[in-house]
Image (cartoon, rainbow, N blue to C red; front, side, top):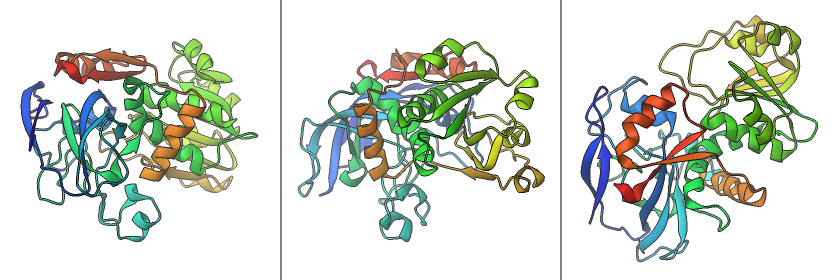
Length: 349
């Protein structure tokens, strides 16, 4: 059993503190990973603050953007060797038997995606704790390989921000001839722009202001519009084949649906606090538009995403912080004061 150093939070209004957590002994198909870097996702903040409803089992160690090195393996592990560069994303197991799992869509496990990397309960009945820690034990089927030309610090956010945007762009066939809009230019949004551009789509950013316009164009956007300007919605009405909404806030979905062309789809990947989003059916039926949602991708697609990013030299823009700056980083994320993803240097635990 490994005792890992970690950062934990004891309640929705508490600050992070130093902690030690026990990682289970290796089962036959388990991999022990020494974590080098862990990204900070808005989901971490929502969960730590208890904003998604339901009971959160504190103390909580968040973190599902994990990059590190294999340091030990179980007796029957075949996919990884000690010393290999690997990552772990938003889930660490599933039932493996339902129809969705058999199709490689473990994120939609019919048994409930059991368990997530943190704030869940594993098959041993123990609470799962995430990547704000020095070590983690994960079954080999939920570990992915990090290509050599992606640094570990930049790889970490790909395990959530990367796959969360790659999956819907891939599923809804973003590519040459398609007009794609990305709502929001944060941690998810800037990855959506980079990936959609690499897929060959014509990309437009829809952001509240033009403050990040220069960055958006550098990341591959063809156009950039401020949604605070009502003229934007008039000018772009009926334009896009696909809209990826990355913001974790309540917005006027009907206004954004009006920007879709015939048979266009708006996909929500941002997950705001537990508030209903109002959609008028007439926003959909007039042009056979669709309003959809997407989670992360399965393990197979996550590996595909990493390989795609390696091939196209795609990496997130990150700011590395020490473990004692997590609370400050949370405040800055909520203030939209990060370009574009915080990554914890786990050596500072």
